[in-house]
Length: 207
Image (cartoon, rainbow, N blue to C red):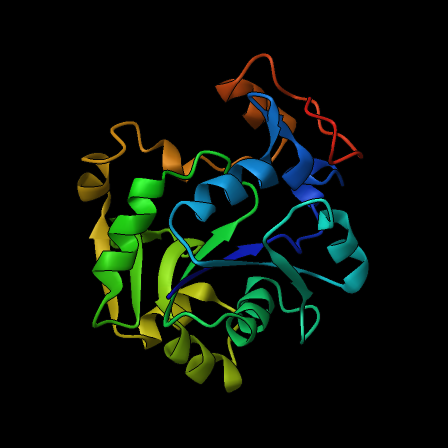
């Protein structure tokens, strides 16, 4: 069984306080695009929000579970902990909610690369990693997250038996490496889609 965790619990400060997961790109919200992609490659999808109130924002999406952080205020580490407790698959793909172009073929590659390791992490070079577009072994995540001092994802990766997957290998599947597109604000969104740039408070609104 393969699982996927989507982290949505950030405070959206870099997006001017707006909810990035409801930004739209090519007629679909980020979260809807991401969920549709992950349904192709994962047997279960868990969305991790910061609290039950935020979870209510995703009630319109079928075939997923939304849970909230067990330990509040820890950032992505807290979301990973809650998600790892909730999923059932041995290997888990983890994604941030502000990546609307994730490629299903790249996710499959990472799942395959992770077999026999604690994690498969895309890397641009020794210092530039993609910890929130990666696959982890659930038991390894839980083993680290039950007792840890650092909130750094990099420290977590270094503590695991990690397989690093170079972007040149990923480029064979996604030549433009669009899978790593990360949208922090509306200006970023407009740079990849000039017709975009409108988020919505109504998740049912297609544009």
